[in-house]
Amino acid sequence: MSDERDECDEAKEAVLPLGAAAIRALAAQVGLRPAKPWGQNFVVDANTVRRIARLAQVGPADVVLEVGPGLGSLTLALLERGARVTAVEIDPVLAELLPQTIAERTRLVPQALADRLRVVQADAMRVAGPSAEGGDFTPEPGQARGVQGLVELPGPVATALVANLPYNVAVPVLLTLLGRLPSLGRALVMVQWEVAERLAASPGDRAYGIPSVKVAWYGTARLAGHVPRTVFWPAPRVDSGLVEIVRRDPPATTATREEVFACVDAAFSQRRKTLRAALASWAGGAVRAEDVLRAAGVDPSIRGERLSVHDFARIAAAAAPIASSSSSAASRARFDTPADPGTA
Image 1 (tube, helix red, strand yellow):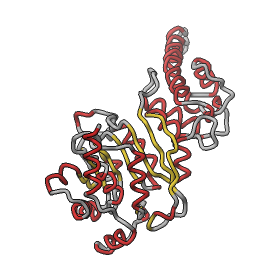
Image 2 (cartoon, helix red, strand yellow):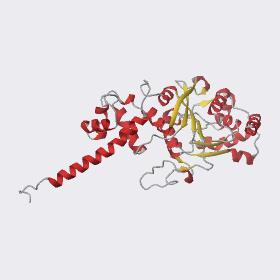
Image 3 (cartoon, one colour):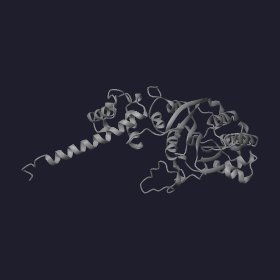
Image 4 (cartoon, one colour):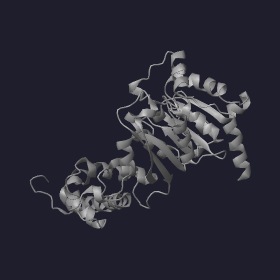
């Protein structure tokens, strides 16, 4: 523990954080105007990024995956704590600028910098972990890992996700990375406040919905803090929230993750309806939906907002044997029915 603390202390002495003036100067240097489609809102307050790095509880033993490092303010805070960082940046200009910025604002020699920071220019939705890691990877038809734009992250595997996620793609990016990178033991992400509430919501909460259930498949989420809009450039119209996710095993079920998520999507597609009605199209009719729900021990008259991820896993698992039973019954009926003399 003392060695880890010493290494972290040495790193702190070596980092010059980015403030508002430095960030604007860097942007001017490369002619950057924050792009709304990429959700570019840069944190300009050094205390905020240091707070995020501290709450993430990362240190020299961690390899941190940072999505959207932008001009590098959070990257510096993570390096300051001694962590190694793999930064995924979609903007090619920023991806090229980041190593130079880090080199200029730390005392790391080139070899140490290369070991501590790796920059991957890619869309975070198109990255996968090292081949040896495994994880959920569902290729498009005819697609293999590393083909058609899918980028394999360099090793060593990431142990934590710490990121200021773009507002417009925060949930899909988070769910994709949690699925593809099982090595991520925890995450601390900054998202729009309303999204933060949804991610951390529990069954019965007003904000509870599809993101709440799907994140719960991977781990336990909680609100870890509030971030005012005033610490960003340009300032967004809403405040942000920090969400901590600690990974745990998914629910024990015979259903696949895809089957469970399809059930969740159906239940919340008509969230004001009872589960019997909301799951009718998913189950193949209201009567069959009720049979599945009763088999899973769930009241058909309640709404999806009252169910946990474990409840949805039971429902998805119960659907398979009922479908098999219905198919067998239909097959027996077809072969047991006497042929119409007029068609013989």
